[in-house]
Image (cartoon, rainbow, N blue to C red; front, top):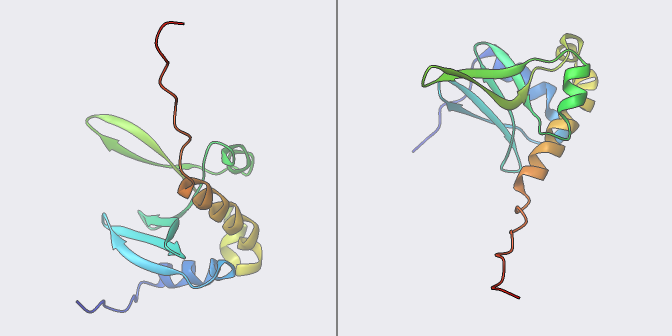
Length: 125
């Protein structure tokens, strides 16, 4: 199936902003877009807002910069995701976005790593 070219100005701008990470793929998902680099999700666009991937290790940096988490409602509860808004000034140029883009890629790479397996307790000793 052929994919339609992306024409949404915000998506095109976000791809340009994240270009320091390499070629950015944009795909429609859940009424917004998912942005990936090398098959790893690094950002989403939802409600006309760019959110970059985060995790528990990088979350303090996002919060210190005044970021807000992407939230959605499910079964009557608000749920936060591991995606945060970059600082407003980062939306002005790829150079200003670069440190935030790298932080998002760091979280994406970490998410790709296998989780350590928990050992089952052995029998009585």
